[in-house]
Length: 203
Image 1: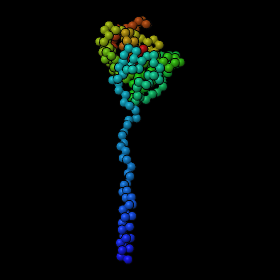
Image 2 (image 1 turned 135 degrees about the horizontal axis):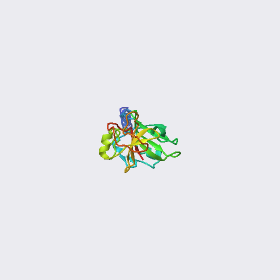
Image 3 (image 1 turned 90 degrees about the horizontal axis):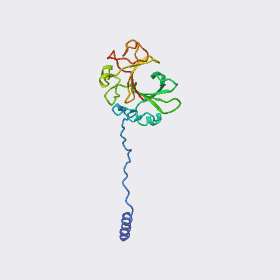
Image 4 (image 1 turned 180 degrees about the vertical axis):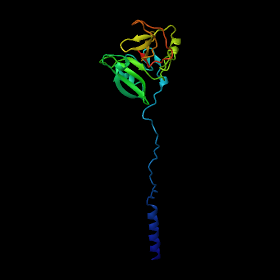
């Protein structure tokens, strides 16, 4: 009897040794995600958009509006009228705003998507010779000695032309004007030097 008990004990030990060991259960936890705050749109950097001959940064006259829009981000778009900038014909003006202030506009040729004019409106946009819409007539005249101002007879505005770069410094003047015009269509010397342009047209 004693021998049988020993035999049964040995069999039990042998059987238990041959059983696969139970894997230790580990509690699975969810990965911890890091929340990164991303701005609604990439930052628009004015310094990357220099006013050049036929260009504003990488935006060029002759591009389509959709091609031009691939070269910038971070601005709100609105559709206005080209007549607001002195151009008739019924073309739209696509205006781009940053924080509620207009940066620039694109005016396509009538019934096309091809950019004909660029309106550089923000004072943070600089020409290659350092002028902005915050420059006075006096500062403009320093860059262009002996320059004259012209009257826009259609709108009653005034403009100073850079004929080399095809820029127009546009003044929506009323009572106080940059020049004096005793004769129509005759350019004037600069009279009031403290006036600033409302925008710079890139043609």
